[in-house]
Length: 500
Image 1: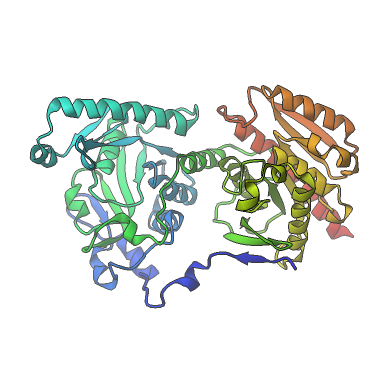
Image 2: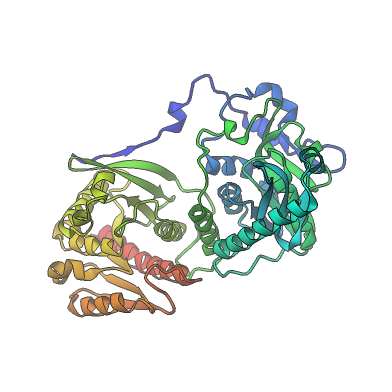
């Protein structure tokens, strides 16, 4: 028997003694004012909050809670700036609600040479530098040592800027409201540099917004921003992480994925039938998929009024955490398609190279999960599509050749259809093969595979793309091709089924 089980039930797992701020008190934050700048904090109800309580499940949860306090900005000319790395997932949720562009301002801490974890200041883009005079004085750091640390950090700052933006130009801030978002405030030096950088680039108004901060944060940062907003503050503040249930370090891949997903939302869809979702998904949960005797990790996202569901078959060496497949999934979600990303192999099996290329095994796993999806009451009525990357494309074609699966559409990105060569003539689902123009070997394999397909098929070559679609704009191009193919074929399949 196959089952789809929530692997984490955060609300049920919480200590029953944990208290949350009421929505009335949260909304009241936005009306409290300090002298000069607009200050929206929890300080006026701090006694209602246990400082030791975990306020947020993770950064995404924190972003959604923060976004509620910022809804009044929707419709204004706002740019949301996330501070890498931890601030970007928070900022993404805010940008989603405000329907605003998301970018980063790169800031690097300047650590004391003999105690790097102690920040003596920070640097940012546009040549901004802020020093903590007290720390510089008490540690006795010389101007030469400061310059040496700054030079090293600027190299890293520039590297990250190139990596994060992936060739996209910086968002123009001149004359606009700039909303600077981080996952919390500790010393505030990083946020201060970011706000000063925004002003240096001509921001009309600067707002600093965080989920959590020390009670005196606005006094520490007076003059830094025109407005300060936080979900909560605490007198007993040891670290930002104490307010999060999950405060794992944010990776560069996660930052890039958030920025790519946000950029995709700003691109107009190619079909009038596609409408980007303004609201968060109806379901967005980690799941455990049972395939035979194995339990496989997965992630299920179901938008409201989903038009179909796409199952992702990952390539060799990849998993449900693949930033590229997660990015493609987000583009599909925004077009109203549900997605299930899951691992075809267990962690132990992944170390066995023979299993990585065992198309019969991978295809059978995908077939079992397909049957499981059809058994779920809220998913049973959705047309099913397969998205396969690399070896995962072979698994998708192998599973689709099983006539019981009744798959409505298949998309292969940089796929290896040759691995399912003996089954390829049995595939009946409309199949789109997407290949990078610079991926010559795989392009040749896909051309040969298309010649043998007996179903409706198309081969799309993305100019300039190599196997992993790492070049600027190429992954977005592939995601849009997949989106249009699935929307067209899954919706028509559902319509046909409804007529029967």
